[in-house]
Length: 225
Image 1 (tube, rainbow, N blue to C red):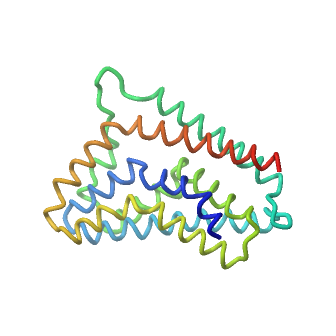
Image 2: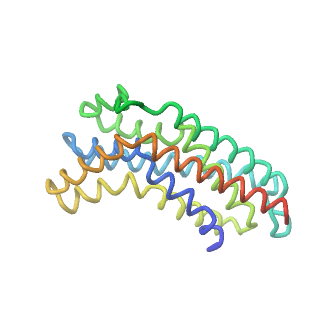
């Protein structure tokens, strides 16, 4: 199981530092009833990641992702396709970046986040996982890589849970800071939000290109064995 967790660790880190979900979490915890809204957001985020990963694991198990402890060929094909798609998304992200000192426009839903109810905060957390193509691709890739190790069902679930916990560190951190530091956390959170908003395109491009290259490399390594 440790090897499986090590393999998907880069994917978890990439998801954890995707700027938009972290910025949303920061805005939520800084709003009225922020701790409750932030908690609902995080719980829904967890649920979305677990649901995606669980579905992929179930399909991979039904299709025999592991053959006597060795990855099945179709898993490497899937990883290759996912890797190419993720690289393409990275290129697209870079080409769409703001230029000439322009700031990236703030999404309309994010501008209205102060008015979110607890239910809408939870819906946002779920939407940023289950309805976000980048997150879906990376979670699906992680679940496929876990499945190809041929672990027992219990170990697969444990590996997925650990992956989700690590991938959720970014959205959980603002809530933890607010709970621990109270109002003293606001300056730090505002600085993080501003930096991530300013360099969103660069961060996303680098992450997507690196993760895409990793998935392609993993698939090539699988073909060679």
